[in-house]
Image 1 (cartoon, rainbow, N blue to C red):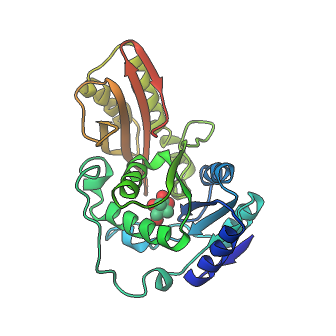
Image 2: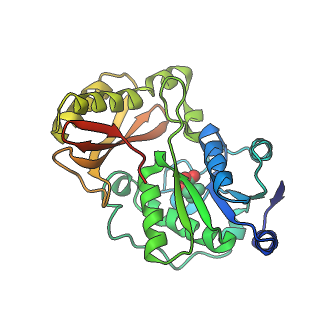
Length: 292
Ligand code: PAF
């Protein structure tokens, strides 16, 4: 495995791999890796012969007062994990390499970002699309893998690839959970042991929502209210949003039918955590399905 820090070094390595006829896979990350990231890498290796991972905490996707400065970083540990997992190339640029000057061009998103995290984190998805588009141009992968935990990000990136004709395939990896259901996230590192226990309420409320739908509940409001009551009775947890949206445009639905996502963001102590569940509902048949 090679670790490089500059764009020309990545381009040279990827071009050499391509010349040998290899299919290039890519997993962009912000580092501080956990099993969730490593499963994305497994997926990447199943679909490509040469696997590139980027480790870059992207400043343009953090708003004022968010956790850019304190976002956990440990490149040495990441490097070890990536080597063990069979990654071929790690790209860990610094901010000056990715943004040598203030970018003038930004993404304006017409749909998909007006609910869920979009309005709560103004500019966030524009910053995500900016860095992902730059990384796609730098790495030029055939396939890129993103986690379903960041459902809105996944669907926006898939749409950007379609709208802007990037010649690559987007693949989703399922959310990886701790044994008690908490979705793995680098931000779980912010939690004290007590907050870590409280944080399981996100998963428990999603499971309760699924049970209600399996029992026949179809009103989005009733499902949201049941989740709200559960979270509000958990000390230390503060709801940012609970929304039930369609999977095409991420717009709120009143009734649960077809393919819908139940998504939430909750503050627990110093961490803002997100999670979601995608259901397919056909008559009485209710199944949990992958987002894409
Ligand atoms: O999901 C993340 O870790 C980031 O948003 C990404 C896709 C690496 C862009 O910075």
